[in-house]
Image (tube, rainbow, N blue to C red):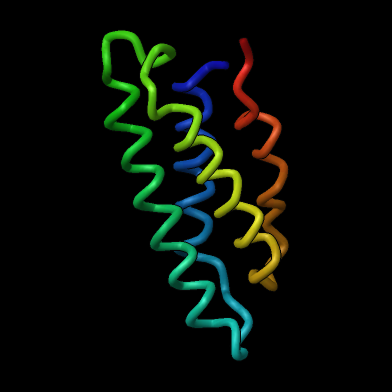
Length: 95
């Protein structure tokens, strides 16, 4: 898995989430909370990627799984045309 490419894709998604019109509904607060959790997980991944041997980092797999879960939530909560789940294939750790 190319962590740097994954981070670039997730940062592009983050930029899109900041500019996309969100459906005004009962899910708006949930969506905003989910975006904040996504941004925090992305920041954690960026910090972890600076590690000398990221692939042996014991927290990498749980972090990627958390990102995958958050992206699924964003897909369900968002009313926009961003295809959030298109990024999930990149989140599957390869051995």
